[in-house]
Image (cartoon, rainbow, N blue to C red; front, top):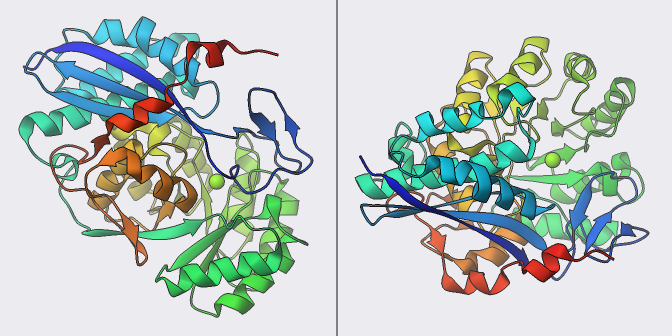
Length: 394
Ligand code: MG
């Protein structure tokens, strides 16, 4: 028994040189830094925002968690500070799966099956698993079933550049550094997605895998046409072809195209994945550890095995704590394909972490040491989102 004595939250706002997916043109923006790109309806922030959670026990141990929260991180903070945190005080930190299910149950009859509620829970879940690893003095992957993979193969995600030639040159430089795969976003293509795909294939040669994130933009018919055009140049994955709610559309795409379809970065539980597996929506799942947490991630991956789907974990905005959790979980999986490598975020934020996590020559190292094997350094707390910033409305 290792009773929880404190749960602390830290909302961060870390400036970045260039917004996610490249320079801002013709964007709708707010004075507080949120923006929406033409052609991509989703909102982002010019800075990297995330929430860290620290859980401490009476035994003197502490564990760290983190969730995706680059939009309104204050919502996650409130859920944890006012509800989940106080309810977990006194519980045994080495029961992470039990506490995950208890927290999930707290709001299910009100219809909170995911969203901010589950994002907050994922940060807590990761911290509890980290704590359990610290207390038992073993790396997280050993707690989750054992380390099958020493290295985790990485695909390079996003090619921010000012024009198509620069974009192809960037892709070639990643290939030359040993990376086996690259992903571009058709929503921000130069020319048309087909033009960009053709240029990338010509520049990269036949061997490098090229994935395309279609950002949920299409009807089934339009997605089928776009994938067919891209697959003339050997597309390795069509990601998110249809709207997240369009189960029938995704199923139609998956049945009609001859390259693999991937979905799932926006889904958090087996309950959300199950109907999509039953409908035949995908060949590859892309769970995001910063939204699922570890307990749910492992459940989802077990479900994927039953449907013979491969796993290509998504990697979103954070300082690297949930990325470390994702690498540990990936290291266990027999059906792992590739792990996303968001180079512009991962490389820049590594300075905030202790530990030996890295990505080079085409793959990630799995951090060594107990639990996650990484922890925040003090300097990250220079970027706390202040109450004044959080309250800013213009
Ligand atoms: Mg995506």
